[in-house]
Length: 371
Ligand code: CXF
Ligand code: ZN
Image (cartoon, rainbow, N blue to C red; front, top):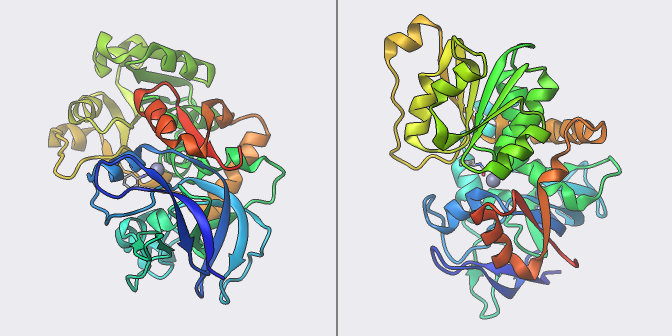
């Protein structure tokens, strides 16, 4: 049966979310309906809110959900009502990237995650006037008490961990940790700079510790974030306005430049400075939300001569079905204390949670249902 739910609806670009009662459909063939326990707020929710990625309105945002399976479509296997699950990004399962277990680079990534509905154009949500509300953002639209996802982007959690902390594994945390563990795969004893110490950057710093990176340099404008970065494993920290990336490399003993750099800022001048601070065989991972039309600049001979690499990374290059359980293992073993980034808000306080995230007061706001 369709169900009456509570959701934060954005009715126009830039508008704050309004809590409304909506109707959510029964799951279709390959869909799963989830009763959300909690959902993280990600910077990309704000990018979508502000129309920097064009998505249809009205819409329910939210893409770091965790909850319990409430209903399943007739074609779904491997999931049952009552299962604990984390929701992640969606992928098609039948393109060359999905065939290679690289769903983050799915050839249908944009329509599936930003399209605002199913591939046939229908949505899962209807408002009180009977008008459609766009759904399926990142295959979930989880700023709501219930969401419809595809079975491919629902990750079953077997471990005995509180569901309320797990949602951010589906995007921000996986993006930072995966950039290190899945993509850069740093050599033990190497050096890495992480520029920007939000949820993505701090997750990268924790993962650098797991990978055995020797010199882990945190760079940010905020002193309190740098202090947290140190607690989570950064060996050096620098205020971004007190020098250049190259000067920080020298001060950290990396006189030839960094072996690895992760940019989470999305700022062109920062990316350009990072490129020129790469040592021989150095790799820069671009993992931020880059506005369309933004370019980076590099001297071709500098890249070529040292075998340097500049590469993009989406969602930490993760296959969530295997990487999220891996991160939960690291967490349970005490190697990946990502719960230190989280502060909880009641779902009704979504506006406060968003502003705490945007101001930097809270690293990773998480909305709890029935809190
Ligand atoms: C996004 C960043 C912008 C491009 C798609 C993936 N990651 C998560 O929020
Ligand atoms: Zn995100």
